[in-house]
Image (cartoon, rainbow, N blue to C red; front, side, top):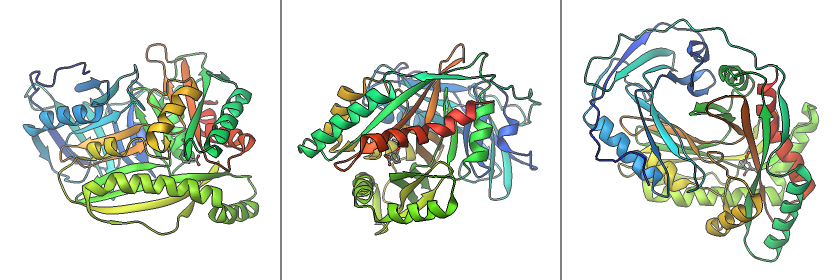
Amino acid sequence: MTSAPLTAQVPALVARTVEIPDPGPLLSTLPSEAPLVWVRRGEGLAGWGEAARFDVKGSARFTEADKWWRNLTRTAVIRDEVQLPGTGPVAFGSFTFDDGPTSSSLVLPETVVGHREGRWWVTTVSVNGDLPPWPSLPSVAPIKRPGPVTFADGSRSGAEWGRIVADAVSRINAGELEKVVLARELIAETPRQLDLRWPLRRLSDRYPRCWTFSVDGVLGATPELLVRRERGLVTSRVLAGTIRRTRDDVHDLALAASLARSSKDLEEHEFAVRSVADALAPFCSSMNIPETPFVLHLPNVMHLATDLAGVTSGQASSLLMAGALHPSAAVGGTPTKKAQEMIRELEALDRGRYAAPVGWIDSSGDGEWGIALRCAQVDSSERTRLRLFAGCGIVAGSDPTAELAESVAKLVPMRDALST
Ligand SMILES: C=C(O[C@H]1C=CC=C(C(=O)O)[C@@H]1O)C(=O)O
């Protein structure tokens, strides 16, 4: 079901991108209202304003959103003096994990500031056929602190969650399925309306190897890139298999070595790589899949990681690829259908947009889509209540106590980002 007919009159999109001098950190250019963000190591996109949006529910959400974007950009007039991926009009998107009651959205910002390869630009758009305003950066209000934040259990306490993990392990050992990813929720309350720039700045400063994102009230820093399509090349960073860090670098190195040898984690990782490679295969004429994963070090956890790369064989956009890849075994399980049923049965949680594609797409279909992991969903009106999510891959050898501790470690980035 779509909330807007695809055949509705298509607005006349005009976009203009101009090069600008270094404006400082991208996140410092953002006004406080509804920031749209995709940033890693200082590069990426920061947008605001809403020139057009598309909200959609149901199993065809990715294809319908892709159709809407193609319709909108097909007849667009684009003046782009920078010509890099992410220049010209871009839409930011955030999708739901399943076909439940929450909508997925694509948002076309009025203004986007971008930075890549030593260049900076501003794009402005209009959807009424007029030339958009001359790109300029507004002066922005200082970032407000959230004040003391409280945290409480969401749909289940930690102990209850440990019990459903134990249940999943016995069912995996009984042969019902091979892997399931179970998530838990934490509720954060802020005493005053949250200025989203506060957690975003902290996430991007502390987790520079992650993609910091904010789209339509979902924000976080994800280490997992579901798919990037850029000028005929497709890449994907697959993660699965995790170990907590201890703050002792020497000990962490030993842990990293044990992670790289752990048969439980290597097996979990293999499921995730296989699911991504299988889903990408129809879009690629060739693909490179490294034989062994590397260990990705983040401040709170370490992951087994594999970077896949392929050459595209058709016209499918980055968004269609993201839809085909979702849900990968890193967020669903193996086999996918069985895992989704078990998630619904055991979690007692509407995942909303957690563990689903978040990212951006440009008018050529190129773009980057991460998986919204370790993120928060802000209630839209008051902005004083957030649902925080984190999940863990459960396989035959999983220990519920260790998984609970892992989920706590995965919640740290968002918790810390909200604290004053
Ligand atoms: C589902 C999450 O992590 C996934 C991604 C990387 C490693 C994972 C793991 O080792 O369990 C999870 O599959 C999450 O952080 O919410």
